[in-house]
Every structure is written in C-alpha cells, then in structure tokens.
Image 1: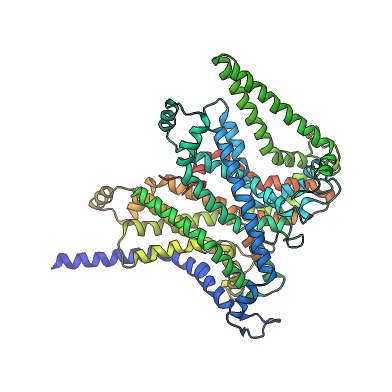
Image 2: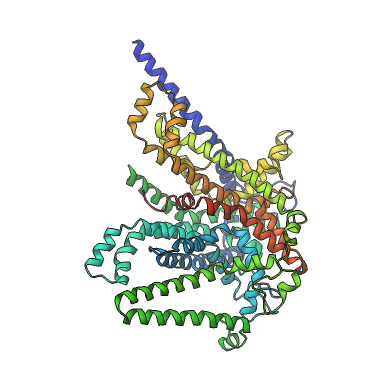
Length: 299
Length: 323
C-alpha cells in the first residue's frame, strides 16, 4: 500500500517536472509563433482602415480573393518561383561539383576545402554589399568586366536584375552547399566505390551508379532546405534592388514587407503571409518526413 | 534571353578580355597535362593528372574567393583609386584609415557589439530551452507528451517571415506597457532576443542525441541517487556534447545573420547586418569605408570558421546526413 502511494507520487512529480521543462519553450512558441500565426488568419478577414484608430471592417474571404488575384500577388509569386528555380538547382550542382573535386587525398587539399567553404562567413548583408559594389555602374569591377562600365548595372536592368540577385545568392550559399555535399560524400563508404572499381566501372559510371544514389538523401535535403531558404529570401532583395526594377525582383517576403511599411495595410499583408505559409507548407512537410525518417534510422 | 550577343562581346572591356585569356591559358595547360597524363607511362601520367587537378582546383578557388579578395583590397585603397581603371589588384601602399572610420563614424563598432550581445543571449537561451525540453521528451513520462512533441515540431512549419509583422505589432504594444516596455519595446535587446529563445528544431536535435544515451546509464544513476538535474548535467549533456555543440554553432549562424527582424524592430540598436544597410548608402567618395565595414562584419564568422571548422560542418549539416 505504502509502496504504491510512493510510486504514484513519484509519477506525478515526474509529470510536473516534464511540464516545467517544456514550459519555457512553449511560452516562447505561444507568444511569437502560434499567436501571431492565428492572428494572421484573423487579420486577413478584416479590411485595414485608411487611417489608424478607425475600426476594422469585416470583409470575410473577399479580401483573400482580391489580394490573391491582384497583380501584386501573381507577380510576386511568379518572381519567387523563378528565383527558386534560378538558385536551387545551380547552387546544388556547383556545390556538388566542388565537393567531388575536393574529395580526395591530396597534399594541401584542406586549403582548397577551406576556400570553397569560405563563403559561409558572408552573411546575406555582407554578400549583398560586396556584390552591390562589384556591380556598381561607376566603380563596379564586375560591371566593368561585363562591358557595362558607366552604363546600367544589371541590378537596375529589368531583364537581368533577378538573374543578378540569383547569382549573388548562389555565390553566398556556395560555401554551405559545398559543406553539405562534402559531408554527404564522406558518408559514402569507400568499400562500395572500391568494389565497383574492381568490377571495372569507370570514374563516371562509379559516380553515376554508386555515389549519386548514395548521395540521394543529401540531395533531397539540400533541395528542400534550399527551396525553403529561397522562398524566404529578403535581405538580398532589400539591399540590392528594393524589389525593382519594375517589380522584377519583388519576391513574396519583400511584397509583404512593402505592404506593411509603405501601405500600412496589415490586412492585405496577412493574406500574402498566409499564402507564403501555404506554399512553403508542402516543403516543410517533406522536410519533417525526412527528419522522421532519420528517427527511424536511429531507433 | 540574352541581349544581342554581338554587342556584348564587342563591348567586353580589356580587363575582362585579359582575365579570360588567363583563364584560357590555365585551361589549355590543364588540357595539355590531361593529354600527357593519358599518353605517358602510369607514374608520369598519375603525376600529370595530379598537377591537372591542382590547376583546376586553383582556378576555381580564385573565382570563389575573388569577390572577397577585391573587397579587402578596396578597403585598403583611397576612394579615387577604387574607381580607377585598370583596377588595382594589389595595394602597394595599404591605408588602414577606412577601418577606423568605419568603426567610429560608421558605427560598425557599436553594431558589432549589439550583434555580439544579441547572438550570445539567443544561442545561450536556445541551448538551455532545447536541452530542458529534450530531456523531458527523452527521459520523462507525462500525459500528452506526444501531443506536446508534435506542437514542438509544428513550430518548424511556421517560418518567421510569415509572422514577422504580427510579432512587430506585439512588440509595439508591449512597448507601451509601463516597465515591460523598457526591455521589450522597439529598439531594445529584449525585442531582438526574446522571440528566438526557443527552437523546435533544437529540442528535436538534442532529443535524438539523448535517446541514444543507454537506458542502463539512467538506471545506474538512479541507483546512485542521482536526481534528474544531476543526471542531466553530469551524464546526458556531456554524452550529447557533439550534438549540442553543433546546435550552438547552428544557432550562432542563424542569430548572427538575422536581417529582417532587426531591420523592423530597431532604429538605433542596429545589429551589424542591418547596420551594413546604412553603410551601403554612403557616397562614392566614402566607398572605402563601406568596404572596410563589410570586411569587419565578416570577421567574427571567419574566426569561427577557422577555429571550429569540424564542429561547424556538423552544425551546418545537422539533419542532412543520417546517423
């Protein structure tokens, strides 16, 4: 009897400790993730008044229809998709190429590895500032070498602005891509490659039939995380183009930012934010699936 | 897609043509080495292939490093020389004045200080909350544990970019509350730090590491009269150290590189990333200060990369490679 009561008390105490340990995180999540998330849906149903202090007018789902069919949204959505397609595949291929080249026992290879990972020290802001000056029409060296000295910077050219921003982004993320791909390559067992070499497979066929399949989880992860990052790009747009020229680089996050700060329209911004959430939801679900798979590997 | 190719080629500046020639020469040398390597006897062939590899790696290294290199060079030149053509690629008389100017007049010193404070508290906070929550998920039994764990994972599905302006409204209204507003309103460290004190990803990562701690250890510790906290700090955390270090570095990068949030909640308490935005708007005769500021902003992460390269790789690839 006594023993049983002791056990019960212990279990209750364990439960209390458990709640106490998760509570700090839950408080932060509640205040800065779940509350604003729910508030977004609520804001999206009301029209923001033209002047502050006036009451919000309930407009229901008509605001969704209005915003989602507007040029602002369709343009931003298209630009964002284009940006993802410009940056993600190229970033992965380049990172993989560098990783394959640097993946061998050679004297001094560590120096090359450090150089190839070096762009991880450049934040979005640092990378943007570097390229902003490189592409400056008066002093930009890259602009000069591209034969555009004194004329329009690619960043101000509607035809090239998005490509230029994508190029900066690819360069900035190259270090990360290289590091991820190198780690993936290191996980490919040498015996497997040795075995296929003994079987007479050439370099290319070894890469295609052994390395690439073994690398597929890494490639999958890089594609998803890269796409999520690209969907949420903001800093480089803000620093390099401010969404211009002619909205050619006005990605979704930048459109939200502008709607909030230039138009003071949080109702409209909320619809855009809900849309951004919806398009990235699929990607995050895939990422969670991947993390789950990792769980099953380990347990 | 491209502009008229003829005019683009025709307009190629002499500098770029020279650059192309150097690259072409290197590629040609590489091809020669490749052919020699293929024809010659194995030992020479192997050596030639090796030289070939080095040339290729070096060319790529130069291309990757060039933007950083030219930024450092330009930060050491007077403004009028930066615009001069052909460009100066090696400063013969480096001037360090731009750095002190960036540090004081450009406020890079105080921006860096702000970034350090904010990053320190975010990383520390995330490690503590993640370890505590992970311990509960890995070692304790309590009702609704699964549900709460799913709630933690659900936070991964809400990107900060989706909620930043609603959070901004929260911060603005908290700023109006007496007392609370002093450390949680606009332009405060609290506003920069508190929303990021916990992460579902971190809790998940540490939980995985804790689950790998053998159950026997827990039982043995219990027999020795270890309470939960003693077991956590003495056994579980040390065993999970590689994961925790990786998480710390990951958080550091995330916190240090934040841009959107500091931009919207601060005006004077700028972090270095947003501070650079101000530096990008100086006039061209001050442009060497911009270059110097950019270099200064990259130094902390550069040190981190050089000192913690191994852990950093783990941190940045956390979740990418199984096991």
